[in-house]
Image (cartoon, rainbow, N blue to C red):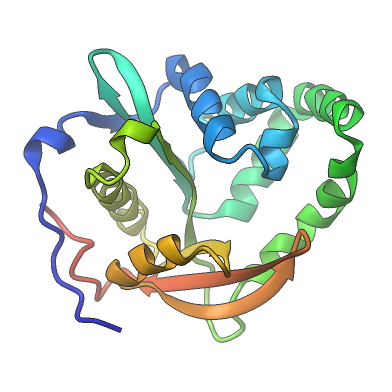
Length: 221
């Protein structure tokens, strides 16, 4: 792994990043669907995504930020200090609404049913066996195509990682598909290393971890 150096922060970019609010839910749901249309949550449809994000925003361990230009949300990132607890509480608080949208999604796309049934096993399969504690997790990130490659994702990563670290989490976790070389290169530059390889949803997946306590990119700017 190459040497990890502090992240060069551009204040002009940072000022356009703010915490996600309920009014951002439609834009975030659309960004999620556009970037991750083949994923389970996206296959359940925009109504499900809007209900999911609205519910997640109520959870104390959920952190989400948007990148906004001229009043338009053009990117977002979301994560949790305790993903399993966040999903559990969100499901409990929004059970009937989520069930309704999930049922409609399954009717529209029956192939998602086996994926839904497998979802509860994600937490055990993705957790590295040698990690002594639960890790915070970066879950979703998406930008409009014209902003990719402009270092904005690096800035919003930094904001989320620091929020999770400030919540008292030493380790931060990201899972990605094993053949996503672009994501793996970016995560290596951020000091993440592969700690687990597993199969999920019929795909080979990797769990990557960084120790935020010793990561020079995760600190005050």
